[in-house]
Amino acid sequence: MYMPPHFEETRVEVMHRLIEEYPLGMLVSAADGQLDANHLPFLLDPTRGQFGTLLFHVARGNPVWAQCDEPIAPMVVFQGPQAYISPNWYPSKGEHHQAVPTYNYAVVHAHGRLRVMDDEKQLRSLLARLTRKMEADQPKPWRMGDAPAEFIADMLTKIVGLELEITRLSGKWKASQNRSDPDKIGAVAGLRQVGTHETIAMADTMVAANPATFSK
Image (cartoon, rainbow, N blue to C red):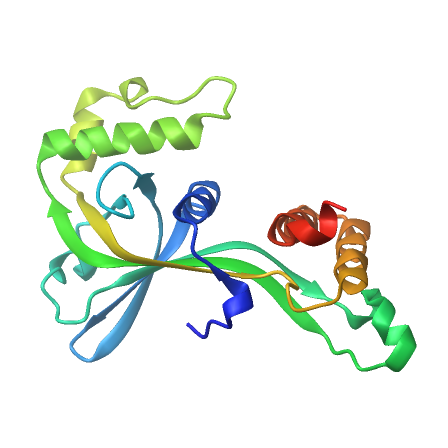
């Protein structure tokens, strides 16, 4: 990933927070000279390994679980807040008109090797943890025990658990760090005026990525 220094995020805890808030990642792997992409929900265990470990599962019919020994290691891409930035929001445009549209975003790339977790006890534990996380905001969270035991047992035979111990973690926060303070402030104001969930999330990301500007 192209990484100008002013957009690079190196704090592991910040990258972990994005993964936890945006758990649907894109697993990119290579097999037989072809790239493959699978969009999957991931559970992050930050305590395992230097950069944490990603836990997930796929359908047994998905060939990705048989690619653990491929020479090219896979990576998972997590997309955080993203939004279009109009040059009309920059005060500098009214001064010299030397401004163009851009797109701001925050992303994390997690690299590592896949390992199969095909033990039923491990798989049940993974699914229970993933369910607890995803159901946490529900008024009455669903639990695996809510379904018939024989149904769950049958479903377990149709999936494969996987884990990816992260060996390299990189983050890019393109959040107008290269703009002047007035332009950053104008862009945040413009995003908040649009007022969608995504633009507000990007505005908050910009404020956090530019503390010297927004702490004045």
